[in-house]
Image (cartoon, rainbow, N blue to C red; front, side):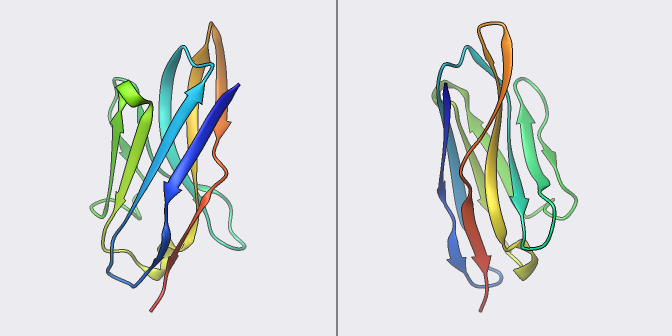
Length: 119
């Protein structure tokens, strides 16, 4: 079983910054990729950013230049630094982990953490 735990989030004013973190643990042989998705009320879940192991980070156009994704492979932990936040960034942010457990590929999600950008 794989556990994905997010932390961070909260309430911030427009133009402010927040940092999210995500740690995966459990029956993981290796992590294939880690990423953040978000879902705003009434909207579909969308990709924010993801980083494959040994690959380049991909960002949604809406967050390029404002969000930075980084990863600590030794700790199976990923960080999302969010700067210049806008009201449109308000959403529940979910961590996604693609992993190998033995030879089997698995996809695990965190519970989500709320980010609210409001004055």
